[in-house]
Length: 172
Figure 1: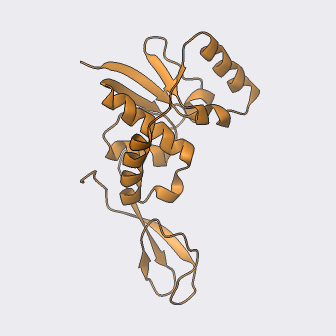
Figure 2: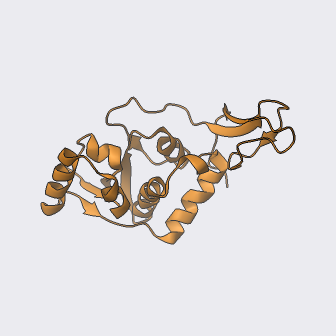
Figure 3: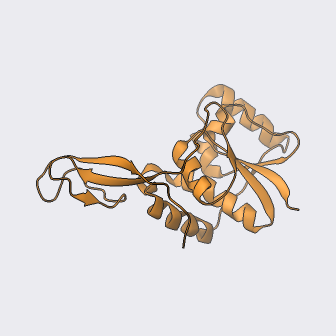
């Protein structure tokens, strides 16, 4: 049985989550997102007392995450920091650990659910269903892939909007 660990994103740290029973991990990019003084002090204390470990995902792990988020439509909704948190969970899972990601970010939770990596929220309820996204023109109804970066329709010039689609799975 693999050892349970937690991977914290910024909301996990800001929300004050820190397991005393299991190991806690985060990335250096998450550390740079912590701006409020209370959270900075808590994080610094946790680092000094070795209650949290900073670890980086590999390029391979990030690539695996990017494939999933491209299919799910979350590509443009997730920052590099968010991708790093998910990729760190992938890395720890591959290292025979059992990571649970602590995050209130719904897009991160959506991807984790697709990848079958457990998560828990700190301050929010969290998601229940996995969703995908499509973009469409409000005027002529032309559809675009979820990773389309334009803001206006190529055909009629109307604004592009986004809507949820059916549940997404992690089929390769």
